[in-house]
Image 1 (cartoon, helix red, strand yellow):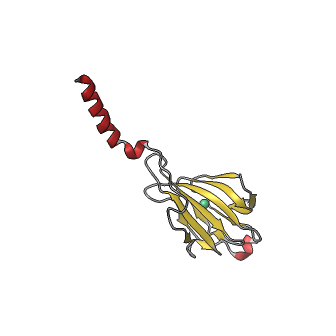
Image 2 (cartoon, protein in one colour):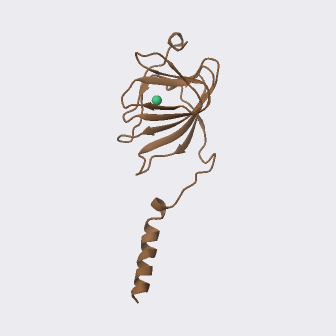
Image 3 (spheres, rainbow, N blue to C red):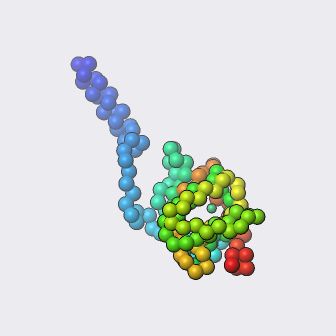
Length: 152
Ligand code: MN
């Protein structure tokens, strides 16, 4: 009898925790890729949503593929952003500092509220994964474009 009650309790517990305890595989292409909005990106960038925030990460994961010359506008993140470069050659710049080249395998941490931009170089495409931490449902504050003069 004791064993049956214990088994029943475990079943209920198991059901309640399914979504939190099971490994979830989001198959390649599960969410449609979209073109980066002209307000937020210069040139041609494609955004592929990979994973929405959840209680554990409180961060959004996405892939961004920048065509040569494409980059974000100036922006900040309320709780920071992790970039992991997966292909090509890109640039990242913190306001007031020199632009830096980034390459596949490079990991870039952008602290909260630091004004910056990232994108491809003028002659190469660049792809990165971006994990962007949420605060009150927001993870970015978009600002003005990086002028062509400044970019080059
Ligand atoms: Mn950023």
